[in-house]
Length: 380
Image (cartoon, rainbow, N blue to C red):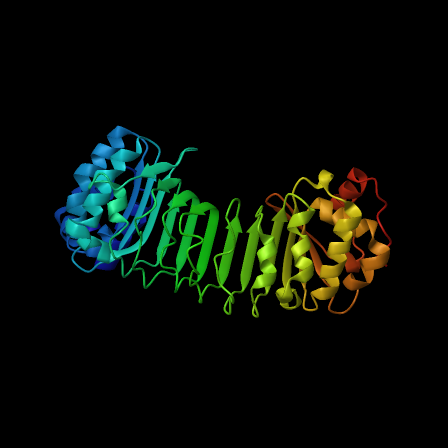
């Protein structure tokens, strides 16, 4: 019966199988079904365009080392390549695989559509240009079709420009890394930087004029240098120490803001943040709340509730909710109007929606009130 399946169905079988393939049972296994399947798949390049490489043992590395050349040959000269490399063993084993994927003098890098390079370790993988076969060499080639880039846990020596030409790049994610320079992000729409140190951070402005979603977390020297973020819609600052730089930039179209801080200092800059008036959705996450001054925190929250004239949703932690309950007599009216602000309690991954203005009480409210020794206010 399998010989009677249409071309499209056979291709879909291969593509679905590829999503779940493993090194011992790769997509090539389906080539053994029959000659028809072998002929169709071998001559259909998109089937061979995805490389989800998990280097979890030397055996897996050996399998991929043998498999890559033929897969690349079957992908044809024009099919975009989607590459994921996750390393959990000696990082140097990724060197030869990256060189194969890049081709001679980086010729195949012109086909790369996405690249994810993640080293799973608490100690970043240190790159150097001393060895011509080192992965950093691959990162210096032009990648004109690359739209998505993710690198994690890598350390690169200063003086070498990486990812110099990425005119199609739309999404960037860099975490737990020391990098020589930021990639070309001039056309990126989504940027996420987490615990990143850039050697060239102080050497001039970074052009990100088209960014719409920007997430900064952990240790980052400052916001990527720019005077204006004209297209920015969403800004997330997670345990980020440099919120003071907010007052120095213009974000006229910002509608969603998320702040997570380990102390009052992380929230204070919001008092002078000019873009706050256009916020529709506000996320406030207090880190180590037992060290925070509740009165000062309420002063900030009250300012935000009045300054955010377009606010419709306020996402809070239990600590922030307890402050709202404690001061309900002063702020409760903001949740009762026709255009009331909806409060959404975010507990880890659980979202508990509380329409405080509607007077509904539930187990979560009772739990918060009990934890902070508060009385549930009269919402009517």
